[in-house]
Every structure is written in structure tokens, then in C-alpha cells.
Image (tube, rainbow, N blue to C red; front, side, top):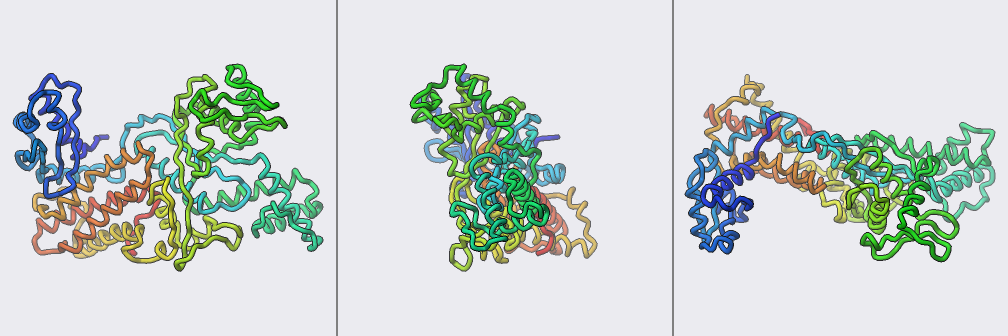
Length: 553
């Protein structure tokens, strides 16, 4: 697999070689290349001369001149770089450098942008991890979209990714689920019975009760509490699985919180922390010395009644991940879990088993506000107290739902405008990107209907591509591999959506400014070749987001 060297990296390497020739002693200085804010200044700028002036005791402009004079022969730059102001070096790419990305895209196709940097190292991405106490809500949906996109991103970087769902099938909330279903069962026989205030009030509880009564008529009142609990959890797990399937999200493994207790993992973890001298007893409770690891105060692990606080099984769970061989683990959570992160990290360090500081990585998402007709939507017909993921998918479609959930930075609040998501306009970000792909398909279809052959576009002369629109588009295409790598490093899937929006904008601008099916055969073929390459990158980017690339809209 040949690796495509993006233009920015290629320019940096060229200037690094020039620096080594001009100043051989500077073996540890790394050339930095940036895109100028003003495009009139060129495609890339190098300001290293300003940083080196004090170190070398030489005027920055003299350093810039020496570096430019030492540039190796290359077809990368259009001409000799300009030196502006006190020593800024501004460069422009040659036509050969700009157009080479087209051939690379054709050579790699659906894999253009993929990297082997991960070297098949194992990484776990845990996400959604919803309590099996009700249908998935839109917050779970955002977690699913972000987590699944992170997994896809890391796969594209060459990691061996395992997706895991942690089921909180133990504790007070599960008992509350059982009591809620039991109450609905008993109301079937006596409607005057009062439903518990702390119970789950959604219509889905009635559905579970009805299904239970149909399957187990001998226990129509739900007297067998263990049986009711087991049935309700299984029912809702299946419901959540169906929701995730509709969202095109799959998991390699499901981990049950209850197994941490049944397999003795929580007790083993606590015993190890005691053995390591990382705990103490006070007021009848067992405390973790979490302040030794940067926490603002020590934390209770085992309360005076003998029950564990909620972060203890989390520590045991991550110990289990480490012992399963996942040297890297990423957890996608709602921002409301932020308070537990420091104590989990502290607990893992206190285990003294070689877990790296900062393990696992956390990606937090903020809440979602769902709007329709300018007003907030707060409740569901089925769940009652919240909007379900399934209802949102049914209303706006899987593609729009997934795209909207990842198009903003994870830790920023998101307003999901149903009317916008359903609209067929350039204001709708997913429609805007998908329409760019479909628009290219339409142009190519018109050409092939007159006898054109797409395969011929892979070997045309790109010399006619000299317009500003073509230059902008080609440079954007060349950014795709490095953008992917950066998004994976930063665990920032929203950067993919941002990139696709910008690429689509350049395509639409090009489409509105130029004609493609023209009489000038060399120019026509060159332009068609460029948009065919653009179509491929749009498709690849949408694939990373788990969104389709329609040919017609």
C-alpha cells in the first residue's frame, strides 16, 4: 500500500532538506508549514526564519534567503518562493503537484486516505452502554454515532478495533424496572392500584407487562420477581439491539456489569487496592486515597452499609479491559459522567499493574436539544419523558440522524432541528454534502450516455486544470489523508463532517462557475476526471461517518 504524501507534508520535507543544507548544525529544528489566512499570499507559508533568528544571531530575512537558495530541485513548487516582510516564505504549488492527487485517488479508490500507522494494534471503543431500563434516547444516539465514527476512524488508521457495549444490568435501576413492570401487571387485574412514583412511566412498561403476561399466564401478577426482572431486561436489550441495527451500529462484544460481581472481579479489585496500601477506613467506610493521584479529595469505595459506590465496578471493568490485552481503550460517555473520571483513573493507577496514566481515554458528549417548528420537543409517545432514537430515525432518516449527531464537536451542546434535517436545501448540511456526490453522478451519467467511458478518465492529461476553482478543489482533495489522521489522533469525528462540508462547497462553487460537457475535449476530460476523483473522496468521507453516498436525490 503506497502512502500518499499530502502537499503540506511534502512542502515541509522540501524545506527541511533546504534547512539541513543551509544550516547543517540545526539537526533538531523542525520546519513548520501553515496555510496563509490570506490565499493571495500563496498556498503554504513557512515562518521558521523568524523562530531561528535569535538562535542563530542572524536577521530572519537573511535566514529565509539562505533557506530558499538551498531548496533542492523539485517539481513541487510553481516558482521560487516569495520572501515577505521580515522573513515569511510564501510558496505556491506547481500544477504537477496539485494534480498528482487525482492519480493517487484513482489508484487507491475506496481506500484513499487509509493508513497503516496503527500497525494492527488492538484498541477498544466502548460506547452507548445504556442502562437496559428503557428505549434508547437521543443522547444514546449521539453516543452511538460518535463512538461508531471513532471506531471507523481508527480502523482507517490501521488499528484493530473492538466495539464494546457495557450493560448496567445490576443495581437499583434494574430493581426499579422490575417493580415498574410488576406494578403494571397488577394494574391489569386491579386498575385502582397506584403506580409507584419512582417507577418508569413510559408506555413501553405496559408493553413489557403485556408480553410477560402473554408468555407466562401462570404468573400474570408478576409474583416471581427474579423472572420479571430477567424478562424485562432481556426485552429491553432486544429493543435496544433493534434500535442500534436501524442505526447501522454493531458491537463485537457485550459486557454485563453483573458479571463483575458474579465473577468476583469487584472484590478482587478492592482486595488488591487494600493490599497495595491505597485505602483506609473511616466512619465505617472504606476510602480510596485518590488524592495521591490528583483527585481533589479521597473517595468512598465501600459505604458503611457494605455496598460499593458506583465508580468501584468501573475500575474493576477497566482492569478487565487491560487484562484482556487492550493496551488502549476509549470510552464515549455523556458529559454528566465527568465527575467520575478522576477517581477511575486514580483507582487504576493505585492498582499498580502497569496501566498507563490517563487510561482509558474519555470522549464526552454534551446534551441534545430536539427542535420542531421552532419549539423544543421533550417527550416521546412511547417513552413519555424523552425523545427516543428510533422516533428520530423514523422521522428524518438514518443518514441525517448520524450526520447531525457528529457534525459538532462532541463536548459542545447540539441543537437537532428536525425541520432542517428533513429539508432538501443547502442549509441542511447532510443534504448539501450528499447532493454534491449526486450532482457529480448526474454529470458523469450524462457523459456516459453519449458514449463516455469513466475508466478512460483515470489516464487523462490534467494540464488544462488551471482555474482557481480547480486548484482549490485539488488542494482540498489532497488534505483528506492528513485530515483523517488528525481527526483520529484528536478523537474528533466532527472534523470529518467539517471537511466534507468544505469539500462540497468547493464542488458546488466549481459546478456553478464552469461547464463540464464542453466541446474542448482535453479540458472536458480533465474536468470530468477531477470531479470523478472528488466523488470518490466524498464517498470515502461519508463512509467514515456511516452515511450513504446517493447517486440521485
